[in-house]
Length: 194
Image (cartoon, rainbow, N blue to C red; front, side, top):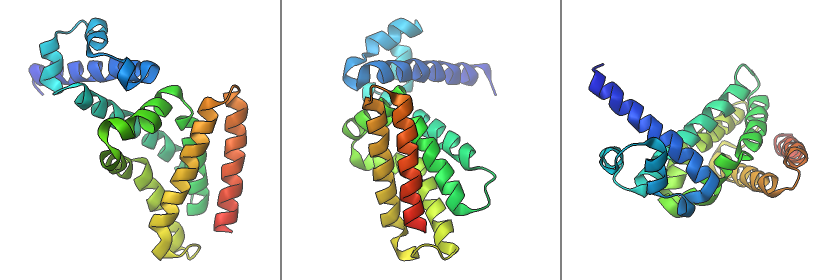
């Protein structure tokens, strides 16, 4: 790889990392391009070389946060042979991850309004929601779930998980709320999967 391409990737990564922190702390409306430029020490031209506008920068941040959350969720479920146990482990991980202020703010609160519901769902389908559906497909293949309802069940479970994540994030005691949220997820999945 030539040095120019390498520098470009490094600059883009630096901008995404700074913007992730700022969007996570201040929200989309509260984080400015000027703040990203100030912290990065880069010129406006350098930023606009990589991103057309603030929304494009946010979308890159959203995709990076989604990819990281999906990776960590999959790691939590790795090595589990039973697809229902893998689903449970992944759901438990998502409750923990989604309770992180950056993830909550970027993925659950700002993303639908900034990139639009359809694009938000498209990115989620590629990452977390896609993994959730794949887990349910495996459970259906094992005969523990009606295969015709996998998509609807995936939406139901995702909605429940995201609501739990928002409750955790708003709690004055996030650790206790996470514990209770994970207990609720266990009970929901136990009833759901038998």
